[in-house]
Image 1 (cartoon, rainbow, N blue to C red):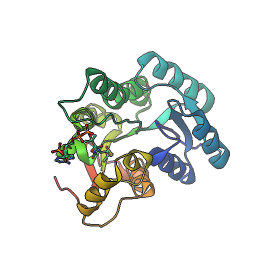
Image 2: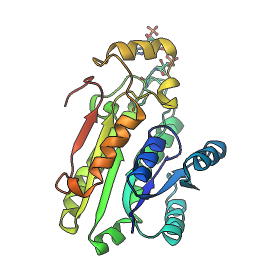
Image 3: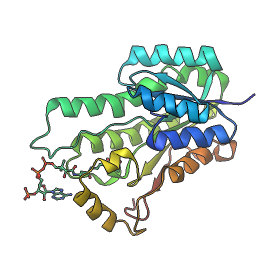
Image 4: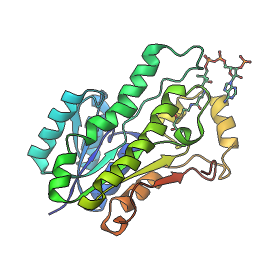
Length: 240
Ligand code: CAA
């Protein structure tokens, strides 16, 4: 029977590419989304991948949503915690709301996604978790004190979970995408985006599929000894 994979934020951007790649590799995929019903319906019509709507920032909604996915499809064996938002502003202009929204979604949202599934993974002695962090969690970024804090925090989550899950054959790894051609990056003012591309030795934005293929490897049986790692996929823009 095919493994069930949950991809948060899985109907758009990098998440959509991950959902499609995992489906192609034989997983039964559940893709979550927060608000864009139209994009989610179009995604399901195009791919046949089931979508579920809940806000990852809310623990009870996440728990209930995951229970529904498991009732429909079976136990979740693969988690891709991908859902994320930006609320960019220079720190002197950043509001407490902009801080909180990003923390709640990008950091607490990862907790809320993994925590309800974790006990089942421990019992079944199998699990694959990939958290989509960011180059900006590694290097920091002007106007992203909030976002960079969450993406650095996500790395702490996987390094700790890796140690807790290793004996139960659960791996937890992070991918740090660089600048990828998605709506999130396209929302950056054009002039700023041009200057960002100029800083990427590859001379281009990455493609969502380039992240999806890395996820596909990390969740495979072949990657069982890769645990707690951070994979950078950024066109040589930044090295740790
Ligand atoms: N480094 C240094 N200075 C910078 C800068 C940078 N990277 N970017 C902007 N500045 C400076 C500007 O030159 C300007 O300086 P002056 O006041 O001297 O002219 C000042 O900072 C900006 O002031 P503004 O009042 O114009 O700023 P604003 O309140 O309008 O905010 C902004 C503009 C939000 C910073 C906007 O420029 C922006 O969105 N920048 C992009 C931030 C970014 O890279 N976000 C990443 C999004 S993609 C993503 O997050 C995905 C991922 O994981 C990689």
